[in-house]
Length: 351
Image (cartoon, rainbow, N blue to C red; front, side):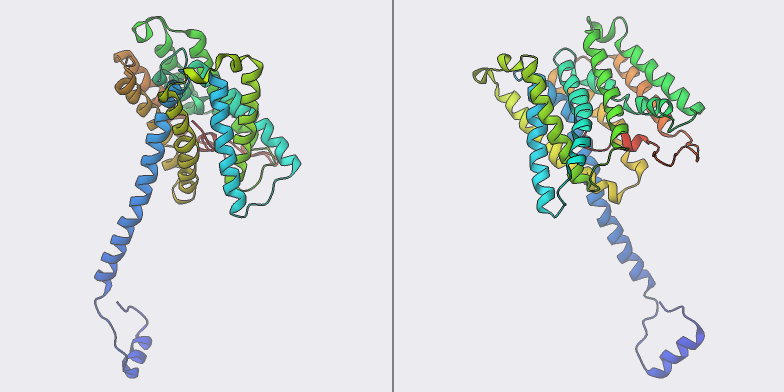
């Protein structure tokens, strides 16, 4: 529909050209259809990371039934890292420098040996849903570390309330009588430690001189972390504990699932979502994944889910929500440092 200046309209009439009048409604309908169709890939993308990353906790539990934890995670991340690295280079990513590999090795050690290796070890002793809820404290640890290293000079009321509420939920979850059975507190503490180490590793990667390509950077960290996990597994004697004849189909399929869907497909979808959705939308998986993990553990693995677990889940996620919505001082970014957001803490090939 023409809404130009009167002189332009007169010029068009003199020229004898056909002019469409009242076409705006058709254009609006077309735009509406395009907008609706463009939302479908977005919804499918979020459904993918919700379901796949929410299910990886159960996948880890099944995998470590007959595969030692550090060797299992090493095979997972080394294989996924090698495939993603080859894909990134094939797509034209420049070869990394020795210095960049050095940073990747440190990051991979903290994130994957410290974060994922300890998580896999813990899941031998505690339910997958409980492990997921304890790992949901990642944003709380991120904020605490940001305060300690100066990227967040002070914690506002929302952040403090969120930390207190979130860890209060953890106390409710693992306190006396939790899950109606004797809880392995060492394993529960190790799962909490894995979230802390993942937050520390993420903070390190924000300052590390890694390649600008997210795909190549993540592949290097997975390759490095996978190699260190395999070395760790051998050093602590897991090689003697692994017997090929004793491997179950369920454990092998779980490992394949973690490699293909958990590390490669879900991460590729997440990388795409970074560019097409808002940070607030992207951070929603931090709330959804633990719920998915608890539900799947209950449905598929007969893990106990009582009123106490449900209440603790609500309390922990409420704490995470408060921290996520905290006001961030504008002056928190130092010249050589970048503030760490909750969304950034959850980036890369997590879960």
